[in-house]
Image (cartoon, rainbow, N blue to C red; front, side):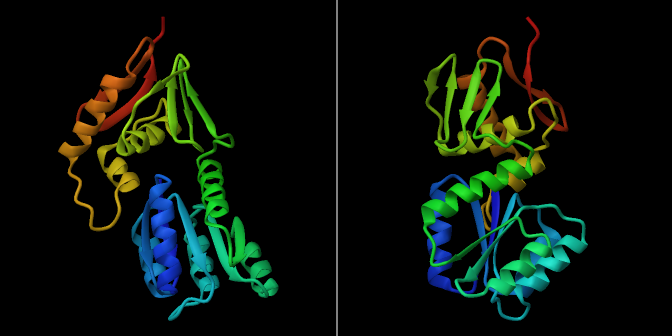
Length: 223
């Protein structure tokens, strides 16, 4: 899942990047409100972690512009502990959650997982597809209750396909969801990741169908 972190405190931003990447997110960072607004205008994210006290454009204005463009991406606001008024304004403008500084990185990861699931219409942490089940919190996959050994990239790929099970996902969408800025991943690399994932999960009624020239679809084969 793709996350944008808009935070001008570099130490905090570095901690958030390390924490979220270790938790399986593809995380990008901007340090000003104008950069956040530009990134959100041109890229698609599954979650925005937004500090309100950003330079060059206040976080509330970034949020207002985001919602004015019709975006429904979940937004988690970071605020100073005493800024109750700004928290209320943020929620009124369409923020989905907030955390007061200082906060626990473990709790932030849990809220990020919950918000991304909610944004994709899957409230629970357990995703199922036939005999396959995926625990989004623990980031582990089981088939017929047997643990499947997947790499970090394969887990992220499976999560995207599961959340859109039965629907077509293009290679471009996979690159957008799985890769951070500056990370060079070609369509051929996506094909390799899909091939490796297929070998591990295509058992019984599960398959990753290729729609030539368009993308992939996680399907259940009727028995």
